[in-house]
Amino acid sequence: MTRNHPQPSRRTVLGGAVAALAVAAGTGTAQAAPGSGWPTEFPLPDGWLPEGITIGSRPYAYMGSRADGAIYRTDLRTGKGGVLHEGAAGLASIGLKLDRDGLLYVAGGAGGTARIVDARTGELLTTYQLTRDAAPFINDVVLHEDRVWFTDSRAAALHGVPRGRRGEVRALPLTGEWVQAPTGTNSANGLVATPDGRGLIVVNAGQLYTVDLKTGHATKVTLKGATDVAGGDGLVRLGRTLDVVQNRLNKITVWDLDRKATTATLTRTITDPRFDVPTTAARYGDRLYLVNARFTSPQTPQTTFNAVAVSL
Image (cartoon, rainbow, N blue to C red; front, side):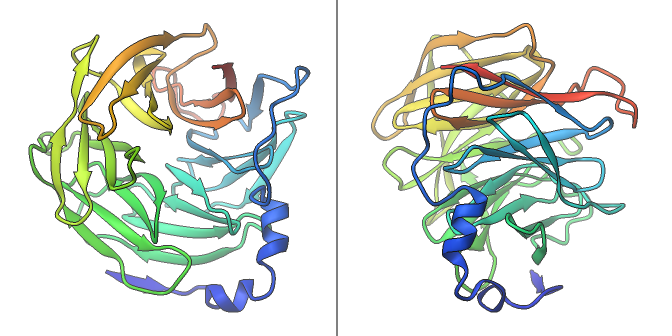
């Protein structure tokens, strides 16, 4: 794995400015409850091809583009937004997460990369080449302790990027009960930390798995109330409540986890007529915000896209 530095090192760029970044990027204070007049639908540029969304502690959503890797920022209070980070041909921004120091970690899809973007300025700070596989798909991302973990939907491995310090990328092969999908189809997708913080929960081909971050051993989570989470994409966890976005089924299933996340019990299902193949979600207050990828519609420069919010 290699690490490229198109810009000065993180410490050089951010030195003395972490507090400013936190305020500007929405990481300085705890989340407030959305106001009753806040919009629940947000337009994105035509042809945006959204996939991922992340929200920090302040009311700004960041949404990536599969078309060219650009990142769009929207004010949740007004619904107004603009392009924060310009894209380029051959790039993609799939899953993304905003850290408390104002850094955006972005999954690079078929490029096999992870990028770090300054959420205040939109500047690209660092690019990690996570894999040299011929056909990777770096899909989603989670912040956990001293690393940022990425899924590769085309390989039985996770990739850990150093968080907030220099270091090497760690490749973690997945073993145990993990079942990799056939070549050319997607396996690992969304991921979150387990409630006890000792591992990760990863959705893979309609099932949930816990992954030991020391060994890579994966254990299937026992589902109660449904046999699978078909179309499972983005995951959101708060305490022992796990929300699973089931994209082409246009629904979110809500699960109650036991302490070690060995069992998940279905408690309810959220649907909305505005869902049009939602892929990932981010929580702000008592709302979930989702991007509609519209995979069943033409994916052209003229196709319209949006994000929507639902109450929890």
